[in-house]
Image (cartoon, rainbow, N blue to C red; front, side):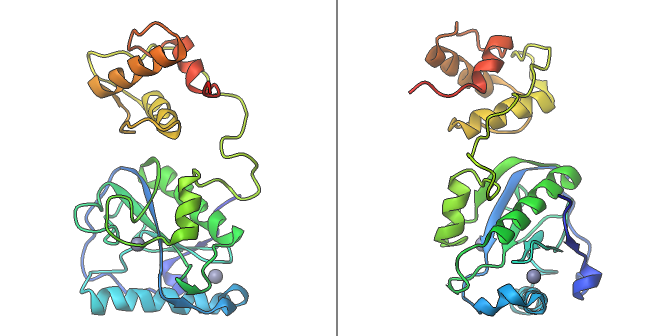
Length: 256
Ligand SMILES: [Zn+2]
Ligand SMILES: [Zn+2]
């Protein structure tokens, strides 16, 4: 489904105070909530979403002294996605030093009142994520604000969903069975450092499987080491090169 975008003009955003810092790519997205009280009536009244987003922008610009709202995009309970700073622009909401690594996507969920993200909120967040991957070079990671920063954000319900792998609601298992991405046709080796979307795809899946690996699209020494360890675990010879058999094994069910 296409994203249901609420443009800045549509929600009546104030102009940013200056030019944005450019971002050409990120490792992915961090998910946020508003915290505080949100009336449960928001579910039946999109005008409340618009008012809330405007108040957040005012708070960020007038209270925090930021040049604009701190979020990249905002997902509401009507599966609409508000344009914040937008793709390609440095957000401010992740915390100092953490903004160039991830875009910041807010779900309109509070810490009292409306606290449980509905399916429409989750779809909206994922629509934003896909949009940022397509338009802003966002990588595969979906994390919570609290990952790497001391905060309760994005709250327990949203964070539990993030930790489950941020599945589409009603979409069945987190890792839906389906055709694996086909082997790219080249063996990923190091050295020299190989780069490309196939590298990123492999790294993303390894991270999904719980490996500690940067999803940066660069197959270097660290990726080779992860590959070797993985190959030993699954009984392949530990070449450190992602060949066809290793690629296939990356999408097989883990042996338990
Ligand atoms: Zn946050
Ligand atoms: Zn709404």
